[in-house]
Length: 433
Ligand code: ADP
Ligand code: ZN
Image: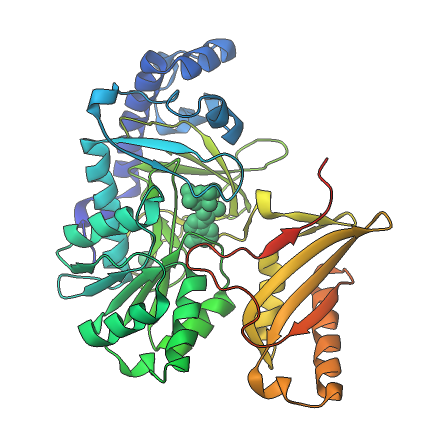
């Protein structure tokens, strides 16, 4: 279902006009209320009046994670504290947590974009939403919660963790939509199986999964294990939280709610904008936020934009699945490696489970990368020869994809730690600096 037809299906021209008007207001607000922006724009010789349309975004300087760290915690806020009704912060996956403030209107915008996301994923008033994103400072739990209430669904605010109880509630209450990280969805599926519960026979129909990178192969795995349709949802604390973009039933890219968040892709080296269809780093400018407006924020997430019309009727630009964050990129003997590349290989393999860990170290001055992967219980009881062949096959496939020789360690089922929120896939033991 389309939640807000006026906003989601307006013509491109109309939206561009709207973006232009909102961008002007945002830039003015930032210039007048936030010392950081005033200084940066003054230094670049740009005044708010120079911004006349959405296309003028190019004139504005970027904002980086370092800029936010310097103004930690509240230095970027553009509203007085008495107007701010909520604070969240990022999970701190990389570096110091980023802090976000929200006015009442910001919370309303957030609920609106989450309502769109949940509707696009299949949600509606009749749905029973088991919200297993963590509640707290992390934006996932409350972000999804407000959107779910806005569409009039029934929310089960279970938060993350307590996995067996999650399965019990799913069975007893008959949850129809599950929201959590993809790695936790997988853990839930496995736990259900161990408890003798077949999720495919339960009323669960939809999954709204995000907050961490995942691959198309992992989507297929979760969909078949749970018997659901799984859609991707993207967001980050600095822009609002979850609901910056979400997939529709076409499952072919995430609609960016670009009447509220203006996306660009830049070349991370030249910092120049690149046209739709060229991959690069995602940059966002908020268009309606009051407490914590943000201009040309470099997310370090890698994606691609697609302006082709979507069969669902929504006219928002779509972004491709995130292929990695530059923060996650490992440089192994000069080769750039993203965990998602390794995940794709492992999930295509017969005889392994979708649980893995990438361990990087330095031995005699050389980077070494070891992939730990769980083997399926059946394979594990096989003869050594079978295991050796599997190990060799994985090494070979990874070499094909990365052009890099890695070592592979097959481990017993259930030995790699499960995540209840964002999975930790990489352990880098190399000395820093
Ligand atoms: P952090 O993880 O940096 O501490 P957040 O909790 O705000 O901060 O999470 C936002 C980040 O999570 C994004 O910048 C992105 O790297 C990742 N992320 C969110 N949703 C997705 C998704 N659907 N696919 C891939 N990565 C995602
Ligand atoms: Zn669509």
